[in-house]
Image (cartoon, rainbow, N blue to C red; front, side, top):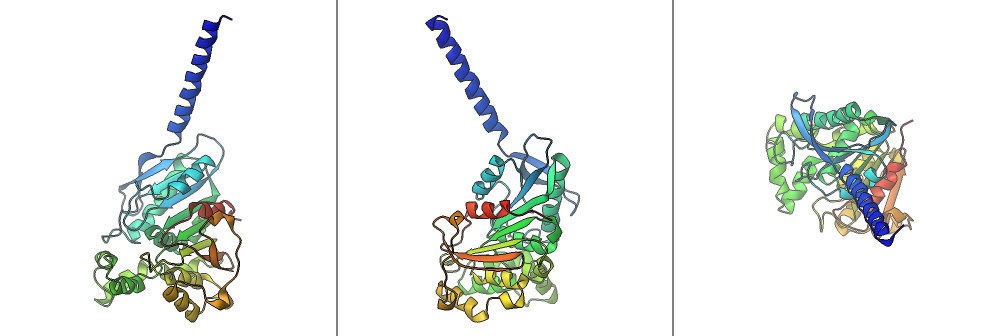
Length: 320
């Protein structure tokens, strides 16, 4: 073969390789979809991706943060990990940011999330023994809520820096003069104590009301950064009390230890131990407790998610 023809062949090979790479990259992108919600028979927005395969694949449901929406890229680390593993991924909007009654753990939001799972199962071949849920902050609130509202749906729920008690968080935000207090009031109809109806909204939208349903049913991974509530907006007591709601009595964290950790942003001397978990990277676990199918981890950090740790734990979960 002459040198000129060799160059042509090599160039063509490079173009073909580049075209394949570009096509694969394009195929790995989330696309905008609308699905029917059983809540009110409306079409709700989401982003979705599923691999082209006839084999059943896991599904990862990703929940946006308190002030976010389905187009948010906060959980890119989890999404990329799942897609590279060949999992289907869906990011529902569940009525958008938590600043109006339709959002923030409403019946509409709950059914939107479950309808998103139904949509994924209709358009892709989903392994129903491996349907996972992950969220941080407001997404952590929604993840904890869904663990209690629909425990049999999930193979594993990973909730990060979430809110478990809206009434308590309203008081915490009010004390720190955070604007979230006003947003909670808009969602629930007013401050706690305004009326029996308002108090019922706080109760129904709070994961603590429902988490007992998740006990010994769904593997639950609860995480919080030790300085959250100081450098962040959600005190770690919200995560610790969520764990207590699903833990055996003997495994529950005492009120005194919860208060110590929350106020001092330190682990009490009686609870200090070395925990080896490379998936957390520099955000090393400082405290961990397990009870039945639930575990809570307090790590070095603040109001954040450690994507690798979340996905490493979820990968290990599978329904019986």
